[in-house]
Length: 387
Image 1 (cartoon, rainbow, N blue to C red):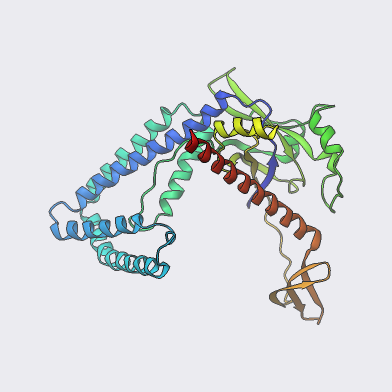
Image 2 (cartoon, one colour):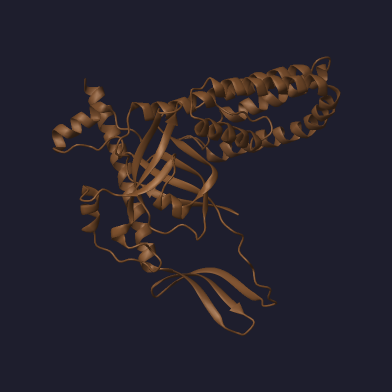
């Protein structure tokens, strides 16, 4: 059984332009795959409608409905009638559904007739994808992750849907696939050529700051003084002797599952708030007397470990229980469910008040961060308007 085990990361200690370039190259490969798929679909459509004018006309009508539906805003525009917007969306979606019900069996029949020609197009697409991967200059772990994500996205498309090209806005991920896997205990002790978790250097400033924090350890948690480690992961490898590594302080708030075999690790970087323009940063520094933190503190870093663990052994039992789900505020938290078993015993599922307070605090911090970013953007617009 494969399970995901995620930990939070602090900003990297030695991130540079070479690491940034590996993120950009993944976006470039994705965009190449989009162009390859677009060309294949156009050639496939040309083969399917060849000598079938009725099918071509029906397909064109389906595309026009899709274009009209895409052109509509995702939500009612300010100052418009929401009911009218909902009605337009409902009409277009109904029309799209009806056209697809007519189009689908005709396309399936034409696919059987043109199977040989479609197979040659699929082979050409496979060769083009292989060439794009080889020419991407990406490390094999990252290129595999991009191609796998692309295929998954293709499978989730609605009828007539198309994948879009991405913009390199800083977000992304770095993937380390461990051939044959590595035990979590070995990762923490001996490590791997691609990946390891090391103790933080003695006397590091992050250890000193974390040691001064107040708070209690929850049952089963790693003690607070031992949670902060150093994740060392491969960014890319261009052959022997050219391996590029980067380091992130990782917060090991819990241990890996017993006997876990780590198959891969994906390090994600996501933006917390809209980027603040350089002019606004300079203006704020001058008048507020303090610097607005930019990259890398504008980002949220996480490490997701794909762990293979043994299937749990379920004990055979004829016991049964009833579960009633319902939210109710009680002393010490919120009750979200009640369980009654055959013996008549009743137990409750309760979200403790400290956990709820922690989540509320996080939501408040995120709200203030978004508010500060919006205020900074408004200030920048006013400065530009007065120039």
